[in-house]
Image 1 (tube, rainbow, N blue to C red):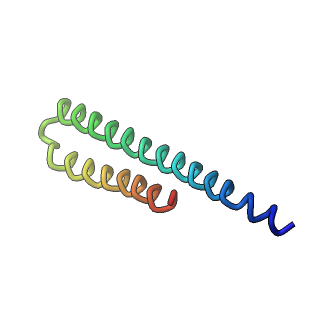
Image 2: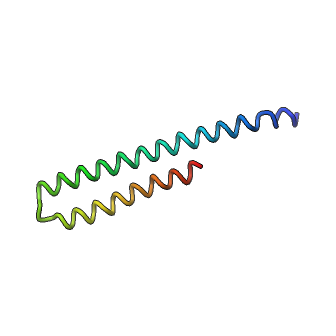
Length: 79
């Protein structure tokens, strides 16, 4: 009984590693998509209203930092 459980332990560890890698990849990809969307919408907003450049830049940087923070969090939790 104990030998069978020990034999399956490496397979379970490998499956957990693959699952963590998939979760990390999805989290990083989602963060990249979020940063891209934020950047494109910020450029679009500045194109419509150039006078609001400073406010849009500030909000864009904060939103990008939050999106990147979620990507980094997925790296930490995926391992």
